Image (cartoon, protein in one colour):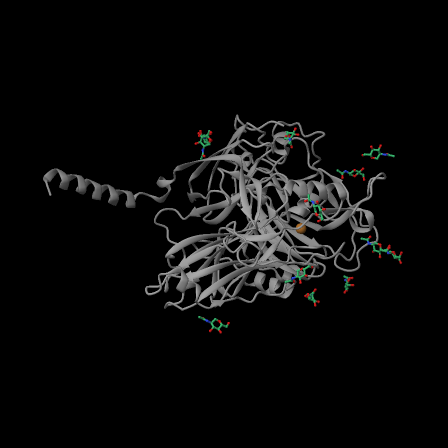
Length: 576
Ligand SMILES: *[C@@H]1O[C@H](CO)[C@@H](O)[C@H](O)[C@H]1NC(C)=O
Ligand SMILES: *[C@@H]1O[C@H](CO)[C@@H](O)[C@H](O)[C@H]1NC(C)=O
Ligand SMILES: *[C@@H]1O[C@H](CO)[C@@H](O)[C@H](O)[C@H]1NC(C)=O
Ligand SMILES: *[C@@H]1O[C@H](CO)[C@@H](O)[C@H](O)[C@H]1NC(C)=O
Ligand SMILES: *[C@@H]1O[C@H](CO)[C@@H](O)[C@H](O)[C@H]1NC(C)=O
Ligand SMILES: *[C@@H]1O[C@H](CO)[C@@H](O)[C@H](O)[C@H]1NC(C)=O
Ligand SMILES: *[C@@H]1O[C@H](CO)[C@@H](O)[C@H](O)[C@H]1NC(C)=O
Ligand SMILES: *[C@@H]1O[C@H](CO)[C@@H](O)[C@H](O)[C@H]1NC(C)=O
Ligand SMILES: *[C@@H]1O[C@H](CO)[C@@H](O)[C@H](O)[C@H]1NC(C)=O
Ligand SMILES: *[C@@H]1O[C@H](CO)[C@@H](O)[C@H](O)[C@H]1NC(C)=O
Ligand SMILES: *[C@@H]1O[C@H](CO)[C@@H](O)[C@H](O)[C@H]1NC(C)=O
Ligand SMILES: *[C@@H]1O[C@H](CO)[C@@H](O)[C@H](O)[C@H]1NC(C)=O
Ligand SMILES: [Cu+2]
């Protein structure tokens, strides 16, 4: 080796040392992505259709960042639909303009237009995801959003050998925009999906689908980190891998106290990091992984099962033919309506709550709210026959208010002081009528409607009880809050009892997340600090319920300090 070469490698070595000694925050970078929204022909179940995609990919591209990084994602709309993209679970501290729900924080990106989503990832690491947030376009517009810990900060568990996204979806042969528009027209329940998918593939249990099977090839004796996302439109899912135990280590990009389980339950909108320890030796078998729904509602649903295959790489078996001869083990999933499983699974979720990853639970509450959530009806137009319950139209509501989508974005209306005629700041703190919410439903199932916001002062500590109703049947609703994580301090069945139930709240290590399944015929209590100014959507993540109006928004006012104020809108913010 010549002197010059030695010098070069020495300085390279020194540079490496210097890099590893840099403080963690100095390494945050800006990562640029380009999302071209285009149509793409995709064949599943022997049926070809044109779907809306990002860069022609289905599922969409992975967005990867480290905690602290800035993401700058330019979205250009080349299709005839209006588009917005939501970065599900990202706090969007003071950057609500980048949150994405159509007509809440932005007007849609219209055909031929672009919009740059520009935000930083603060205090979060784990798996989140991105998806369209307008009508039902998220049926095909979704992908993983992976947040790695800061450089040189380890996971609070052994470093996995490999990381693998597992993203569940729902496949419809028909056009999903036609399905929801038909359902809203007739008032009936929308047509259900034809298959569930793992990473876009329905798998061998469907007709004409064996070639579209997701295969996870693993080595023996290793730990794999599965980054699990439920991107299905309308279904909570059970998931299990035959003969393997899963260790849940995080939900919604928050570490939890690890626990082992054969099966997980994941609602649309939720994400979870799961460790899969492979068998120490080549097992001479293949293993099915399966997902199928957990359903509590009374309507028809897609009761089918998606399957993928866990295959071991073998030192002695190389040919595909010999792999195929191996026995295939199948997991057993809970029954489709196993609410007991759902309740027990929810009880296992607890924050890690360590000094490094504390659970900053509000202990004192400034504002208490009680919201009923559930289905209801709208009367049929005189001139129409409707296909909802008893000839009505299906609706859904929060505190009996079915949210009416405005025609301009709420955040813009607020920021420019032009809210009059767009929204009213008078969302009710409690339901107008009290009744036995989970008992016999009232005879009159009609809902009211409006575009009402709940106003909060900056940094108010909030307690919200979400109470399911049995109107048109009790049902589990995965409620998603934008702009915040919340702590799930309590849950139960029946009517929430404001005298007895708070005594049982967990204020020590409750799970922190952005989407919670409100138990069928029960309630959950959540708490959060309103430390993020802006307009924040809250809705059921079953897309059909959102379409029917099970949604509302919070308006968090600016604080006094300069760093407690919403930033001005970007210049390319789309107009309505
Ligand atoms: C998006 O489209 C533009 C213009 O057609 C093109 O230059 C760019 O390479 C595309 N980006 C990706 C990621 O496909
Ligand atoms: C993103 O936002 C930052 C902070 O406001 C700004 O400095 C930067 O120029 C923005 N980038 C783009 C591409 O808009
Ligand atoms: C929904 O299903 C019904 C019954 O199969 C069918 O007639 C209708 O065309 C479907 N709607 C859409 C939008 O595919
Ligand atoms: C898988 O589990 C089944 C029973 O659930 C058992 O019969 C079989 O021996 C197991 N096989 C392997 C390879 O672990
Ligand atoms: C799914 O539903 C169909 C139609 O209602 C029924 O025939 C079938 O038995 C159900 N399958 C399962 C696994 O429940
Ligand atoms: C669950 O479904 C089974 C039939 O598949 C039924 O017998 C049972 O009553 C249901 N349980 C509940 C709680 O609805
Ligand atoms: C009923 O609705 C149809 C289409 O919306 C309209 O053309 C017709 O005039 C209406 N009839 C009455 C009696 O309102
Ligand atoms: C529909 O009508 C039947 C019979 O009149 C009644 O028992 C049922 O409660 C009604 N359902 C709804 C949702 O109004
Ligand atoms: C509500 O109704 C259920 C079912 O009828 C009943 O078991 C329960 O006691 C009622 N609760 C209250 C608070 O009245
Ligand atoms: C609902 O209707 C039934 C039968 O019409 C009646 O007996 C009952 O009192 C009504 N309940 C309420 C709460 O109005
Ligand atoms: C809201 O309620 C009013 C009064 O019941 C009704 O006329 C109107 O159609 C409803 N609007 C929507 C969008 O459901
Ligand atoms: C797209 O959004 C604009 C602005 O809100 C609206 O005027 C237009 O009707 C929408 N177009 C479609 C196809 O939904
Ligand atoms: Cu719902």
